[in-house]
Length: 146
Image 1: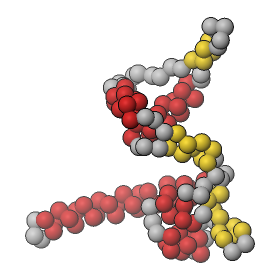
Image 2: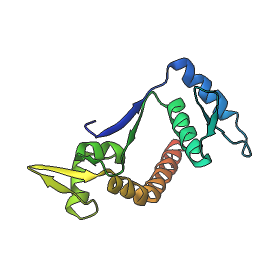
Image 3: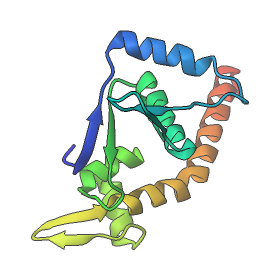
Image 4: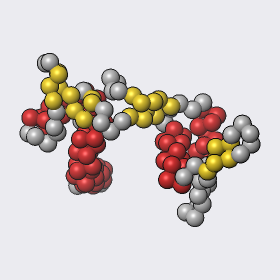
C-alpha cells in the first residue's frame, strides 16, 4: 500500500501465539496495567486509555501477521481505499463521483483522506451486514433445494 505509514508492527510467531493466549484468557473485569520503568528504578504508570489502545494493537497483532498504524489525516489512493472498504477500485470511483467520498486531485491523481474512507466504511457497515445475512440465508435455502 502506498499509504503514509506512521508505523508498522509485526510480532514473531511465538509472541503472537503467546499474546493471543493471554488476551483470550482475559475476563470482562480484568484490566491491563502498564508502567514505564526508568533506569533509576522509578516507574510511571501509563494511563489506562493508552494501555487499552496498546492492548487493542496487541490483539490485532495476535490475529494477523502485520499491523500498520496510520494517521487519520493521511491521504490515500483510490486503490488503498478499495482495499480498506473491501470493494473494487471502480466502485470507489463511483462513490467519489457521487459525492459519497470527498477527494482532491493531485495532478491527474485522486487522493482521499483516510478518515473519510473509514467514516464511509462505518456508514456502510449495516448495509454490508444485511447483505451478508441475505447471502447466508440464500445459501442455506439453496442447500435445502428450495
